[in-house]
Length: 349
Image 1: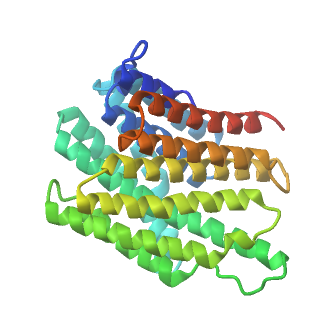
Image 2: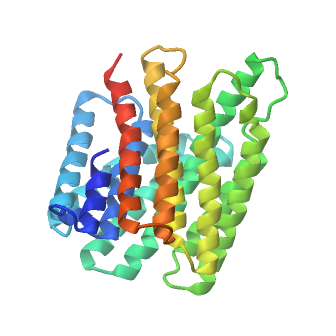
């Protein structure tokens, strides 16, 4: 809510700049390793004792402050690596208790891979290897896309099917294991291709794989028939997030193949899908822990609309439609407004 507009202001040279946010790399760093990795922690680690929680949260806070004000310092690099190592250490044991189906091992495997890439990214950042940093950003974005497809798919499949069942529809599609398995394999190929630094052929392979994945994800969403759900705006908003995800994956793949508009496509993926899905999952989780049957409708609806506006504005600024500075600032304010609504929900019972 606060760091994204600060990042935009810093990059535009408005006001006092924050050292860690004045470059696009710093902006991406905090979006991925500051925000998205923290969301993964909250969603996947489950209940923790107070001591472990204090250590992990305190380390995350220190890593954020160190990177914001001294991004190249050993403190910033070391604490961010420590965060990734600690998260991975707590997640790796899940590999040994994954279900019998190979698809179920994808979640802990992807989470572990993200932690490994986080360590490699910070080592490359410390050595100043710009090509490796750019490559690792593409790799981690692809892994995040796979993670959201898997987690979002499992959540939406059950929730939509359950609601349709209560409405009298007993023939709704659920996980769709063949499509899910295909998505895992295709995006695993895309991830391996993304590791090839600067290779044009690898970029085409990665891009093509992501276009196919985007089409499959859209097909999967259509088979869930979210438009048939009645009285559950929260599920419709989650479906919008999954739609942004399928579109973002496809556009990012197309941008890799064509070599054009990668920044715009990346923001469809990271703003539209990550923003919409995380806000709605956080709000839904809060409703469950607060023992509410349903969310207040205005929170998911307005948050989803604001994130959608932020995505459109940011894409417009990236492709040169309108005044760049104004559109970028407006996009950051829409993002912040969406998370401000979430904050109000979280602090009220």
